[in-house]
Amino acid sequence: MSTQAVTKTNNFLPSLFDDFFKPWKEWVTDFNGGRALAPLTVPAVNISEDKDSYKVSMACPGIKKEDLKIDVDGKVLTISAESEETKEEKEKTYSRQEYNYSSFSRSFTLPETVQLDKIEAHYDDGVLKLKLPKKEEVKQASQSMQVKVQ
Picture 1: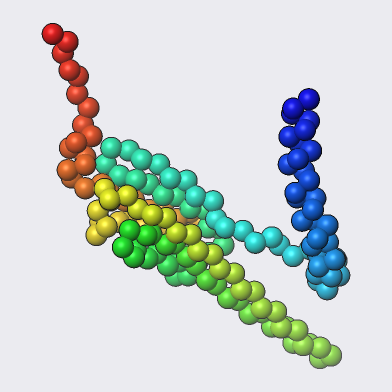
Picture 2: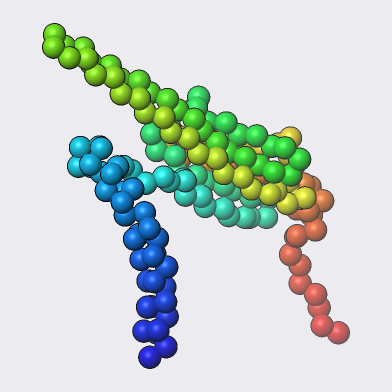
């Protein structure tokens, strides 16, 4: 009984938004030749930690390496990208020009334990990988040991 009530409650809000934006969606679909526009997306991120560093992995397929920008401002790491593409076709009877612009930005608050001057970034096969090394004193403090019971 409670599962059904929760399900109905969760479905109400998306339904309300769908109804509200429905005329706009139909107009966009009609304007775009029957194709709905692609939804806005932000790349997925995986963050992991080991004893020496934090690792950030972001899926950015289709983004060129030179379009990626990584900034550290204080304790905030921002990964962003902007790309613009222009395609032009010219025939005898018509001319068509298309523009494609995409961008994203993700920001993360870094812990105090990160060595900011040692951050490394690599981009390969559509995946951006960052290594955020920990400060030496943190690595030493996190060493495990066994305490004898007396």
